[in-house]
Length: 341
Image (cartoon, rainbow, N blue to C red; front, side):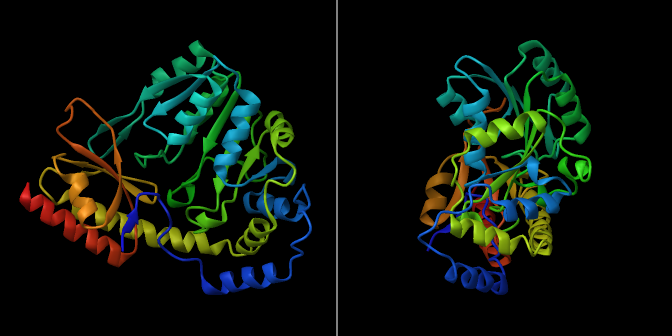
């Protein structure tokens, strides 16, 4: 059976008591009725989770839907959209579909971690006046977090909307969102969250955004009335009553992540960079046969087309952190490859 370590899923199943509570709630739903299009109870729980007001919350069928709503509302053909590179693949796709002029500034992998070109990025914000700035923190695929001070500088210099994508925020030591509890989100700022990662609910497809004043109303206009189905709503409401779960889950992942990183870095010529996500970015000193070897062993990794100064003499992989047993299998496989190289 293939070992899927390419989608950054949480390896730990949602606890049985939560799944049982979801099943019980779903069994009592009226399948013939639409949900309340305003989701008042769900929005209240999401608002309470972050110490914000329900008016700032926009719900979505996964964070991807909210991103699509953002592009449909704020980006027109030819508009500049600014991101780092590499970054979440959906930013590239949505920019392309919107006919936007996607401007990227490259991240450099130096030493143990990613280095963001902060100065040039801020200059691009002022020079290009982008319709949309997208910042994923922790960044996918590098795993590096952006300093809150830098995000604040981007917001201060931007004349339009800034998205702070915290899909992997629970795996980091701190988040940008945490600084606004009880205060409210700054105007023109959108912070994305999801149940797919630390909450272990990827199959539910539920995400949400905390929005500043200028963003919430336009996004509500773009949102279809019943975009979150009754099953998603029920599951989200139940799991949100257990805010301790993502912290426990994230702690397990973080412990495994650091152990795996050390083991990979012990292989000659291999590099696993520091990460605040539930994944590691790997640089492997040989590209030949890696994809084939992984497929033969039923390992599914995310292979990346990164071509730094070394050209094509290396292989880049984003490795999702799995269970302890799964990581032991991966390390066994990597160790054998390392000896062959």
